[in-house]
Length: 209
Image (cartoon, rainbow, N blue to C red):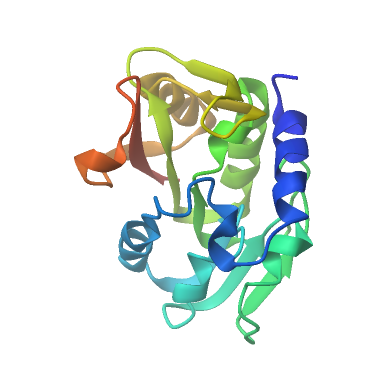
């Protein structure tokens, strides 16, 4: 299954055994979320929607930076670790089907897009565009293919079947532009040692509506 359904099955097994906020990370020792938080804080404002919030490793550290935060996370086993606060609303829904009449100033999607194939991710990006106010920003941080798209269906390191598609960086940028995003800034967000593979690289794309 080269689609999100395979990723869901993989994460179901993780969710059923979770016991710590960092268990959502495939390699808990390789946690670079402090760089993610640092970047998002530069765009603090009235309301934020975070797509694929996991255990709240990011949003739990943004409470004082946004008036309202909507955290979208499929698994309740993960979201139980998101802090209970009056300005955080948790929505349990697959990103493929999530929509909202509410508009946001900032949308973030960190380390999630590769769990959706090309068609699925394009559907999500279109939904995100419609969620945003005019002049709002979408920050997409992910591992991208360096020279070409890389698709993985099994991980020896994890010892499991595992779907991930790391689309080539400029292929993804062009798709975002076709939707309507513009002035897309590419940020080399992590130190070089965080990029463990030669054929993929972490970038954050700051996309303006």
